[in-house]
Image (cartoon, rainbow, N blue to C red):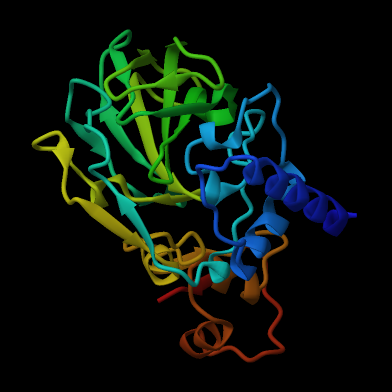
Length: 290
């Protein structure tokens, strides 16, 4: 059934673009087809769009979803191409008037922080960083009131914890366009802007692109590929420099679970605790971690 809808979509895609005599679209590659198959379950166009050419980066994403915050199921292993992201195709605007980054991208306690937090006061205006089209806006879990904008260079920018949203889905915005007011909606300890940059749904570090001190971009273009994403985004490789030396065994624990929790392996735990593979752990038993 999934293959049927994929084939149907590709046919519709070809028909639409064959009618555009002034646009030359190359054949869809095997890699593109794999990405479509990964994402086709979320394909949805809630409102009529005159032409898919009006959708930013249509040749990269191949669908438009305004119902889901992150509809993409992109497998990094499929990204065997170097994607060159033009960062100077439009004037850049820092999303708020403050440049104080209170929390950076990466591991924060035991959770991966997929963006940066920028200080602001409740009610401060939040701006689009570049021109683009609003793909999603509304309330979403811990993000609270959030706006997602897809840009013509293939990036999507995310603005979360807003107190008010000014835009609607499918709204075209220019750089420096006010999209909402800062606040503390969702899961947050106080007013700030949680800001993300994503590529095919995969978060990348905004500080790879943005110079917060000068409130401008760092470079003219960014090359994104499988190796870059694996290096910058490691949600399954948690490293806690302040991890404890000992762990107290709880109900349901075993060595495999403990090893996975602290990014080690069972053999190491057996060796440093002088245990063997047949040892049965006791509740409240102290296990050395490192």
